[in-house]
Image (cartoon, rainbow, N blue to C red; front, side):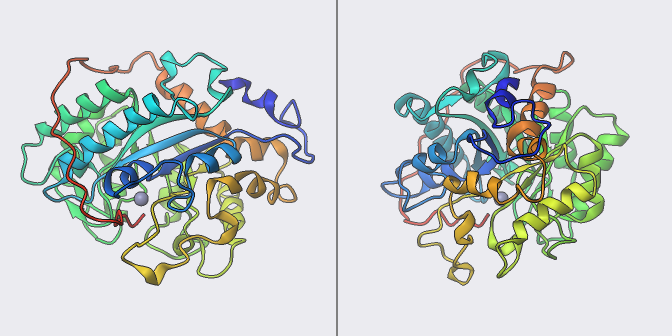
Length: 379
Ligand SMILES: [Zn+2]
């Protein structure tokens, strides 16, 4: 996979100069699965519906896309999780021209960048694994099932915006709960990162403390978050959390949503990136654009959700070019995909991981009946 450097314009990756060839992109977060599982007649190639549609991934040279399995909680959560898993497999089976699975131990070095987009699953909100009224052991069973069916799970976030049995999300002051500690203990050494993008500050600190106090082997990332020092928003990282992620060798994926960048300045994306480098995050910075189904979204006050310059994955190469006057080529390549590749190689080839768990097949409930047009996802 490290041959990505040889596909860039400058060869050595150490020079500064015009970006002539497309640079491979790795993106840490999108909601394609949530869209496909929730919207009637959803189509992964529909550029009208979602910014990470297949044509955009292709034109933006996106070579690795993390597909989040999202839950908003509630009674349909288990079925929605199952349906998103089914869509992940459907993408591999019926859209072979566009997608292939990336699962490093089984992905040949170098093949990742050859054609199409490599995909890997992640969990956005542990409610996707276990509802608040189920035994917590159900989370372990569903996680095992997902890994058996889809391969590696890149990361898990314990919450979304609100509070659940595991802890408090961005818009709460709630910290880490007992079930959150149990889930962290369960993924210790399992080669799964914990994602702080939707953690309240109290939850983020609780997770970091629990990992340190118990010497857990769990890498820490923020898959789709910017910096609160650049734009003050609860979805952005305060400096102490950003620095903790950086010092632990984690990743911080830049989010393209206008609400988290700046209300009216598209160049704020560059300011977030430069700030990340200023605080020492040159090896942590990456992309987590957060494309989701915006058409018919219930919160129309947020329209436009994205600035035109970042509204779909097809813009990735022009975004990199806009950084040329600010960053040397090796920094741009690291941001584009190099840091993610290095992180995954370290994570997935570790000798001390507890591996993939059992490969036993377990039955999942059927997909929920589709009854609404908008996914209702709110990034
Ligand atoms: Zn999100």
